[in-house]
Length: 275
Image (cartoon, rainbow, N blue to C red; front, side, top):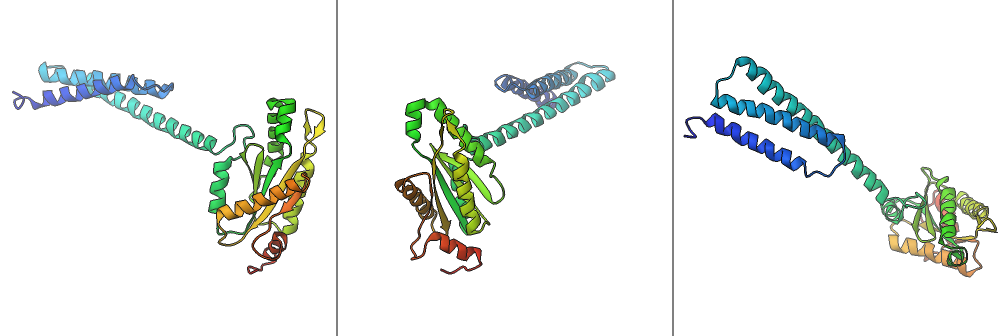
């Protein structure tokens, strides 16, 4: 019996498949007009498929085949295709936004620790300086004035650091009250001046509209083939040195050579690659 009229069963299977697609579209929880376009397109497509199936059972006028079958089917296909395209476009935008947010600190809107680590890894073969900035007595600020004031301080410092962003300077918040600044292509004097200006500008931030903010900064130079963890630890050690030496100051990290990192950075700036 199937072989006697295979077209009818093929049309029936196609219609059932379209009905299943329409039912599946009702399970989509995306609040977007494109979903409705897909549903309306499927409805028109199903209507055209229904007339096509009826044509296998009953004789229909030729005009009905043109207008009720072909026109409905083509219109439905077009609406469904546009709707699917818009949905894919929307999903892509959501993915890009989610990816961007995953690399950004929510409070300061600076790049976060993940972005910082990835950037340091990408620049592994390039000469670069790194600063780690830490807010002095931040726990005391939170305990004395409350976490809301602490957040205001973080936001204000983050806003200052964000203004430094360029192709040579990339600030980020790496956690808690710590910020990191990756520096490329600046001389030793420029790096030191930048660190000192960050230190001075931070004092313009008033804690609870009263006390000036104090920060400590550790600075270090990355040498060729120096492991990432060792490089970050070197700068972190410089930060702790600044803390132990009274806070509110800049300290350069030392490396496993007799001269200091600043002197080596100057040699790099002058074009010397061997220490």
